[in-house]
Image (cartoon, rainbow, N blue to C red; front, side, top):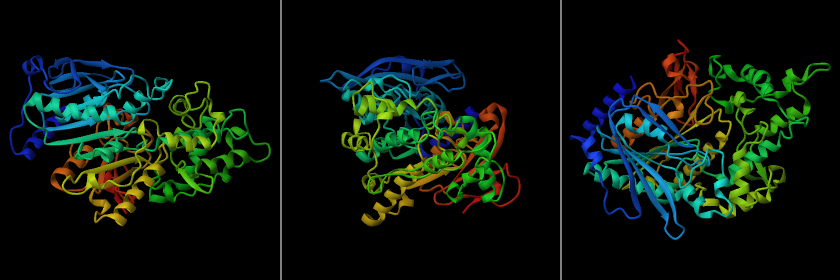
Length: 532
């Protein structure tokens, strides 16, 4: 089914281009030898026939499938700083049936590794030449040890440089392989979303899909520690066990807020309308505390759902939103502490391998802002160079309302700052270049009880179709190339989040500030809901 949809999209792409697009082959892959690309070395070019076994893994990502069309896997070594001797590993996957476009796929957290899963799940099946990099190092998502001691050069590679150089190299590789310049350049990524690239290099992409971006690392990581310290140590009276989040708090949140959108379905479609009162769970004398909340725990919950401010009420970050409780206890407010945040301070800010989060104080927030490790903060609201003529770039931004690792409030905050800047300083209307789609019931990247698959990356599982109605990359492509902007995207929830098990239900994802409302009918069908 996926392969047929991919072939249909390739045919559609050819029609859009109005010409026959170049095709690759086993011979062109075997003979490929790029020339005159400064600081770029070809390390391998491997051809995969249609439905060949593609079994590739690294510390960050893996793929093992026989469902892909024919393509050439080009592996590169890109020098990022000749003086320091640093380099990034980058891959460009070039399908035989090329649709005339390139798409760069992102990474996540502090991880380093070519995202082969998305090259195989997003790029090649849809006919794109796909680009991905290890960001200059190899590591898992939460491992920041590679950043120390004082490895500032590697941190800069991770922060922006490796992906920028990879985009430049990937476009040139694509041009030389097909003997034709790509018509359009896109980006798809979640978590470590590349808002930085369109802010600094507005010509890199014609459009980007960015999911729950960790674009304000100097604030995100202090907030993560702050959230953890609200509940730890685990021996304290304020700690909340994962089972209490799942079996006690989550059902009560749904009891109070689930039906606000017109249907009781286990999903909170507009969490900002939910004023959760944890006091209803207060322990009565003699009650087993595993089935209720103590006064200290209730106080903690109020802190966790509140925005984080410091000093003279300076905004730092948003809080949790109702609806993600089943994931909270194993994320930032679980035990042991979330490792990524601790590594951020140890290796990126303080260069102190013995530091623990119990030593956190708000002075470290200011220090992190000042250092801005890797120049990774990407919060400038001025997207004029990207969005205005003649470039006319487009942003589709999504975030799970039930995100347990990065507050959805962070996405809303950035969107509103862009909106305000555009209104005050330009003639641009934010809807003409930037649209935000909050996803009810979706955790960070994917999972959760909501409809969580709509083409945002391999972790989400495939969309129902690669067309613009169901696939956020397809929606972006139609907006950029045909001028048709999306107001909703139809997402799918697979049974047990396994596509082979069939469809559980479909739901629209509405353009912010609209929210999903039930109009009546079959609650498992997207047609029974509307955006208002």
